[in-house]
Length: 395
Figure (cartoon, rainbow, N blue to C red):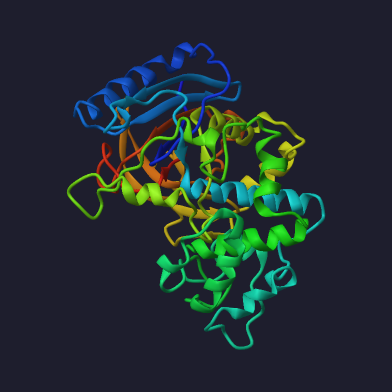
């Protein structure tokens, strides 16, 4: 029987709490588990290896999980299923889901101009004269033409979550258009922050409050939050940055727990392997329909907005699809980070998490393997930068 597995890796500096019991792994996935365990053990041979947690998810829930390495190297604290990591750009997937919910409820339209809800959009410089205003769906699919970040970004990635929208508005005059809206794909972090602000206005509810009430709580994601609360910090892994130095820097990641400025709808969530497994079950059409009907999720998986000329990379609302071999397996995410080998198959590890559907496969046909690492650069698995690396693979 051909094995189709969805793999998501959370390579990060932070992770949350595992809730819910483990099921018995299915027999046909035992070879994959054995290979993952063997490969993971090799990665933590270094006595100062940072941690990661792997989990296997099916539509029925989390069926296997194991942790490796240190959640805190200095304290020699081992990671476990309750370790907390920040999930970075996987947050965008929750923002996209918020938009799908509001469209389903008739509160917004995909084609609504952003200015209808967020007139501050006009503070952005370098707009194209005579061009139509950018729309919600353009922000959600990275086709708004906006730059990836504002100029002098470091000024605007500080400050508490409670003031994220105020920080965003202050960054708008320092943000510019790179392309005419709707003409091409161009990844934009600040675009997703603007999307979150516009959706919040349309919902007449603060963004973080909406996501908690309409998504996290209904899915049972009780160990997930936008802030490093007291509960989150009980199991929060120590983040390490080695991208700019030859030693572990835990100070810079620690400062980010105080707030990341406008980077809330696009990168602020903390979660656990157990909670993210619940979200993955939902994406595999495991419900509940009260969050969003299965039919709407299936329709969104077919909503491909842009693709490249080779037809190997496509983008939709909250997901990116990459086809990597003639056999047609695909993975879903937004940024290539590294390679991972499972049973002789090479999987691309991605930073930023999205989901969708591979050729001919419906979301409910996937299985998933989840892993989380609290330190890893773009070129090797064991160590990393302070930006949480979050991955979702499907094939």
